[in-house]
Image: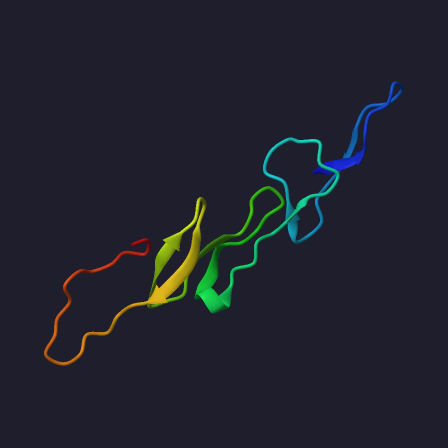
Length: 98
């Protein structure tokens, strides 16, 4: 929810739900909900958890990619897995966040 009308000496604060594409995670005095994060395909990101009215979008990596730049809440940049050339082998396997 967001504040529709602030309280006065004669009435309490009135709140209304956030609109689609926006959210608020915690009780606050904001008059606008926050815009949902968009996962940047140019950074090889995709949504792994869609935005709801109470939670922001969580971005993860496209298939065959790993997170090379983790952010505070999700991934900010993914890079493709390295393909071994003939005559070479995997030195170290990566996880989704490595």
